[in-house]
Image (cartoon, rainbow, N blue to C red; front, side, top):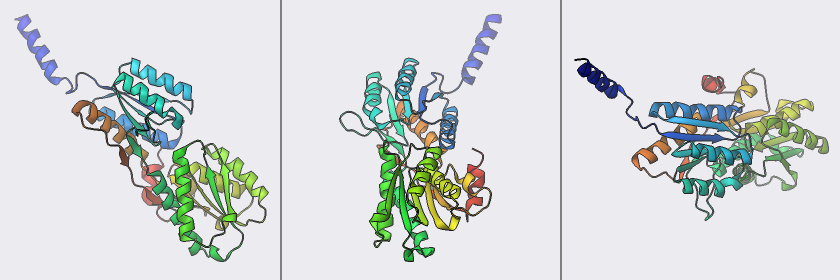
Length: 324
């Protein structure tokens, strides 16, 4: 009787077990874990993993290439069947692609596109870098005209560049191209290119030096790889005593919108093209799960579309982005 009862209890327990009892393991590697963008991105990945009954291991590698590779190897050794990765350096692309192929695991690149040794693109999810840059340039050209800057001779157009990241350079090239197409008479001698390391403090320092070197420029237009580059540039102008109406800056990613618009004060940070990075992280996990469980091919490119956030519509987005 006891044996029959035990058997019945075991059967009940088995029927109550999760549908995916084999517990699929995935890995998620990102390069800047404390940044609001990646906080939201990883949170989205974790949420999708929990919903799918997947064990997700995550690691912030802090732009460290060696840590990226050792983390990748550790995850493979732990039995993951797929990895989503935001590489700290695109030069790692062929290396991680080869590691994934040898381990027979699925690989998807997030935020920064990467390629295998034979130049085959690793499946990618993120922004269309050139197109989102063009949207920035078009918006800045619109503001340039609306504010009456076309009649001013003291305007500088500043490209804040992370030259190590091709994705970032695509964004700045796109912004510059779209601005010049919309403002064909702009003097290219007034374009300034300023390197930074992708962080706000670096942008503040670099632009502060540039402002000092260009005392005759009373109006500045800034575009960059991300919000940090643009808001850092705007902060530099504020520190130098410039007024908001002397500055036009449009960012990319939305991570600093709360800092820029939260206090309701005028700012030269005129807007940002916001991408919900949480959806990127969740989509990466969902694509990996579908590929592993259902043999669904990973699409080569999965693009997400941005929303323009500015002072006028910030209230509509505040609840979505300011809790990060």
